[in-house]
Amino acid sequence: MHKLLKKPSPAMVVACLALFLASTGTGIAAHHYLITSTKQIKPTVLKKLKGAKGSKGSKGSTGAIGATGATGPSDAWEARAAGYHTITSTSFDTVTVTVPAGSYDISGTSNLLNWDATNVGGMQCILYHGASLAVDKSNYLDDVWVVAPVDVGGTYGPGAATAAVHGSYTTTASTTISLNCSAYAGTNETSNNETLSAIEVGTLH
Image 1 (cartoon, rainbow, N blue to C red):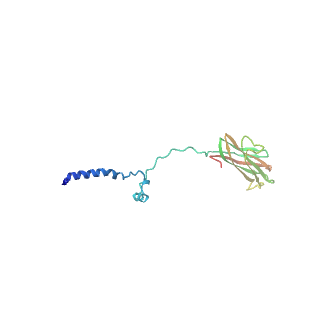
Image 2 (cartoon, rainbow, N blue to C red):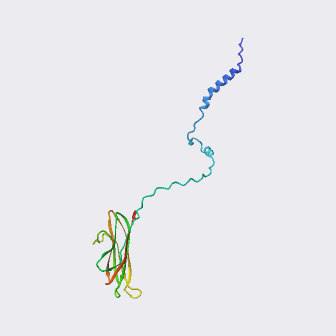
Image 3 (cartoon, helix red, strand yellow):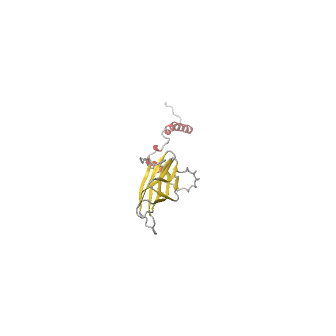
């Protein structure tokens, strides 16, 4: 004779169902992944996750004024000779400037006046550095020759010409830059308005 199984009560059914869900819950959770990088997301999906570009924000307030920068290297040394100077075959320094260590762009001028009504006048001007002209011209920065026409008198007066020199020089110590001039033609010549300018620069190229 078979013994009849007792029909489970509703409470038993609920308890068994709860036990089943509890035992399978860990298995289900095991298939859930923690995303720590966008590289784990498919690009097409990632693209859809990005929102629309927001509107432009308002302009920020003006920042504070920065500190004053250091003084740059563009200092200048200039000199001008006064009056008229008689020009002969003996050369002399018409104007000079003394500059500290640095790199310089240098220019100078001298006006030649020829008072000779018969012969043209000529002048040589040399731009150089150091105490005196070197015989081998090793300290020459520029060397020019100019010719002035004869003195025609009257309204136009003496013949005139301008000698313009230019050079660059870098020195590691204080040195003198000079414009030296002399006559090579004519017998009655003077010069005036001799100028010399040495502008310090950052780098000579």
